[in-house]
Amino acid sequence: MSDPMDVLPPEYRRLRIGDAWRDAASGTTFAVEDPGTGKTIAEVADADVVDGLAALDAASTAMPGWAATPPRRRSELLTATYRALTERSEEIARLITLEMGKPLAEARGEVAYGAEFFRWFAEEAVRVEGRYSTAPTGGYRILTVPKPVGPCVFVTPWNFPLAMGARKIAPALAAGCTTITKPAGQTPLTMLLLARIMEEVGVPPGVVNVVTTKRSGEVVSALLADARTRKLSFTGSTEVGRVLLRQAADAVLRTSMELGGNAALIVCADADLDVAVDGAMVAKMRNIGESCIAANRIYVEEPVREEFTARFAERMAALSVGHGLDDGVDVGALIDEASVTTIGELVADAVDRGARVLVGGERPDGPGHFYPPTVLVDVPDDARMLQAEIFGPVAPIIPFTSDDEVLAKANDTEHGLVGYVFTRDLQRAIRFTEGLETGMVGVNRGLISDPSAPFGGVKQSGIGKEGSHEGILEYLDLTYAAIDLP
Image (cartoon, rainbow, N blue to C red; front, side, top):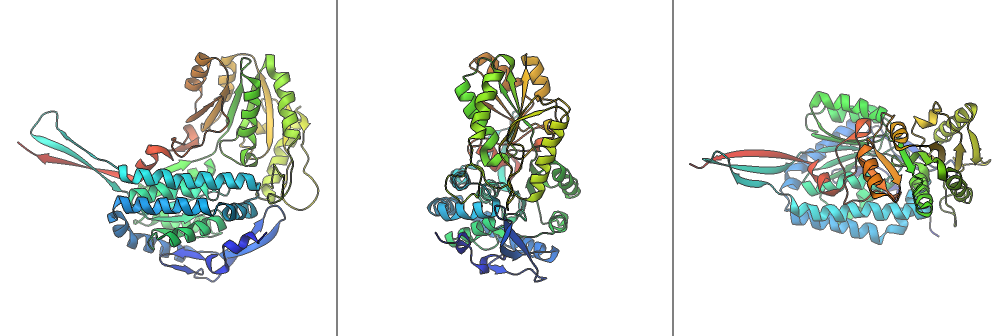
């Protein structure tokens, strides 16, 4: 099997600005490591403020031409991107696994998911509509005209290095906006490869710019302070989101924020336990649990607690841990040593407070950033993991005895991204859907992400929606014209 790095030769491990692949102005680089070994796999350009503003120059210069490009042509380029990603799925997936750590099967799923955003928004590009109507008082007409908001700055996370960029770039391009993406420092390679692919399919220079940097704060701050930037979209922690929102407020920027989660997964006594266990495994272990929509707290109604726990723990114990590129691996490496340390501290805190570990709980020896699938019971309400976003393969199971009790516990968090409920009672499912303070709910289903559905949270889990028809609206301003017609 060829080296996954072969897909991205050194000349493309630089900044993509306008029509060029270029070194950072300072000439500096930073290392990207394989989480499964801890070894460096590449050096990429380390941009500073000068480079960030050069990317904004390119995006601003390209903006009028791209906004004037016929929607059908924009649609064709997005479709071509979808096809290229699909045709090159295996090599892209191997690169994702190498720099992020997830198993190859998970990486293949991410490529398919990310590609679908380009297909979906290729279809949306030709369906951007205004309206024309008679004013209720008569005498004039109301015309609304949607227009692209302008150059957009995207800050994307490391856990889905292709899909999170695709979820922002595709609707922006469909709407007629140009883009600057600052990928996470741990996983910049996949975004550089996406930029190369979009260059190859014919996306014009300056429309898709990528700035890799370890100096994220100063580079992004400079971009947000520049009057030419008109939109910010960020996926990441609530803490960083708050900082970016304060900076965006000074320029009154349009913002989309997909922030942290603390998802409750509720298993009712009347649930189909086969469905519930399967759903809980997906909701907890997709992407090694390194997902904002991962089940963070699993609440199980008392009559089925013992059976569900035994079955779920057995499934978790059967998962194999290893390098994501190895055959048969279910659980790959976590992104870095800090993540392993944080998860270990959360487990230790719960145990210190009286929790019991049924499965896992101790990291294996050897290189790489690994932590085993872990199940805990008897987790007290004051355990830190019930309030913190675990972001790893650790599942606390907590019993409940009434719907009111579990709803109160599920909603007792600043976050409100997603909740899950498993029940065969339709009325109960609706009550939970309405009662959970979340932007999304999975009913008898552990996987909710879909490019055709509106993704986003409430409370401190975010602002705005990504995906679906609503997703393109985040990149459009609306001009209203009153046309006199006596």
